[in-house]
Image 1 (tube, one colour):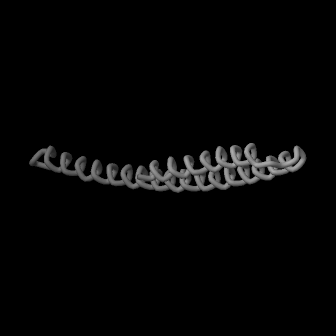
Image 2 (tube, one colour; image 1 turned 30 degrees about the horizontal axis):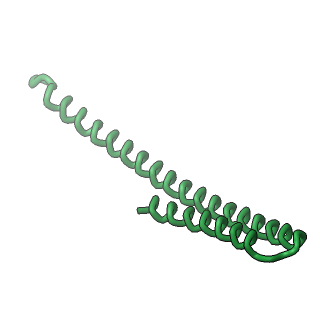
Image 3 (tube, rainbow, N blue to C red; image 1 turned 135 degrees about the vertical axis):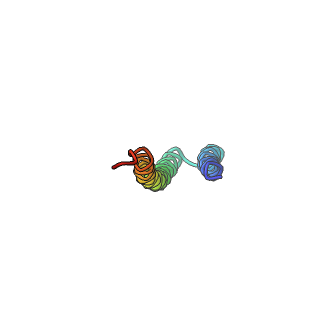
Length: 98
């Protein structure tokens, strides 16, 4: 589901850029004004891309931290279980006279 929202967001950004580009080309403006608008739209798109990338990095960092924690907890649980089983095996295999 998280992938769906990222795809949707990316689609929105691309749609915004394409729509803005078409609107600029279709609008009657002087060359200087069109170039100015193009620079503004380009800067807005760059800023939006930076924001999305930053949120993406934060999301990935969060997922990686959760994954690392789960791995550590799983490793710790496996070590504890191994120690329990080894103690059981030692207890069951000791000679009776000792």
